[in-house]
Length: 285
Image: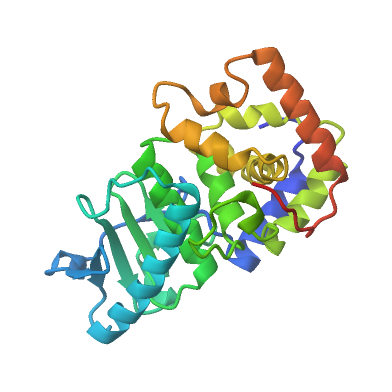
């Protein structure tokens, strides 16, 4: 953890996580075991394999999975058009809990999470009443992992936070069709702390494992870096290139392997990050 990321900032990030239920679906500190009732015969619904907790009605499962399928298909059309791995050859599994209390009882967490994507098993654990922003976050994880397994944590979290407030419909065909994008408000306190730092050193996000990304401000920096690529008009094309170039790493593709160019890109990003207005929306592509 960089020395510039002091104790006060770490405590603030932790309080934000606890108070606002920050979504850290792939977090090393959050593990969701498959509950005993998930061993029962699952339901096949809207392209998912669903394990509903006993007491959840089949009608409720149908209604909820239809909403999740809309989110999945809209994100896929707009950002992941080449991803077909779980359509329908390898369906994504959903473990649906009656409520947050039940979800919490089956999850061991250092920080609170509203849902969790297990990329090892390709399973999303979530309460039945999870909101659309939660499902945008989780479906982004699932689509990215289906497109390129073991994608880096900075890209996973950056994209997942970026998608949370974006109401894509699947009808977007050109850059002009996309609405302006803003990141979730609960990232603002951490952003304000980052903006006070003398040195951000954002290039470290590319070397972050799970522990490093979630125990520091790097997941917040990752989210704003994705927003930065978006407002430069480069995000969708970069994502397409990443998904169709499996032999190249995510950071390599940002500047075609030019390390000096990557340092220049991250320096420009840090200048932008220092000066953005928290909560602002950006048009891009």
